[in-house]
Amino acid sequence: MEVVNKVDFELQLKEAVDIIVKYFDPIAIYLFGSASRNELRKDSDIDLGFLTDYNAQIDEYDKFIKAQELADIFKRDVDLVHVNSASSVFKVQITYNGKLIYCSNNNKRMAFEMQTLKEYAILNEERKEIVDNIRESGTVYGRK
Image (tube, rainbow, N blue to C red; front, side, top):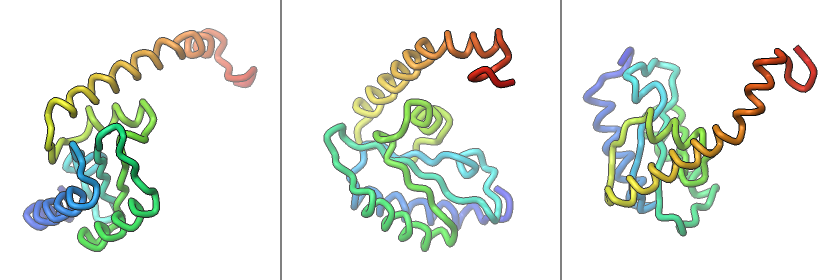
C-alpha cells in the first residue's frame, strides 16, 4: 500500500469489522476496491461490503451514519455497501474481486455467492443479443 501504514490499516480494519458486526450482524464482510488490491493511496476511499441474511432490512440512513463512523476511524471516506441490495454486476465485483475479511456462516456465504454467479450468468445471456447487435452495427440506439 502506498502512503498508508499497513499495521495501522489492519488495526483500523479490525475496528471497522467490529462495528459492522455489532450493528448489522453480517454473514460476511468484504474489502474491495483499491484497498483490497494493496493500491490504497492517500486520496483513496475505503470500500466495504457486508452480506446479511436475505430477510434483513437495512435502513439506508443507519448505513450512512455507520459509514461516517467508519470514516472517522480510517480518516478518509468510506463506501459501505449492503451487498444484498447491490446490482448483479456489483455483487460479482464485490464477492469475487474483493477480499473476504469476516465470515460468520460459510454455508450461507457460499450459497449467496453461487446465487450471485447464477444471476450474473442469466444477465449475460439476456444481454448477449444486445451486445452482439452493438458490436455488429457499431452503434447504440442508432448512434456511433
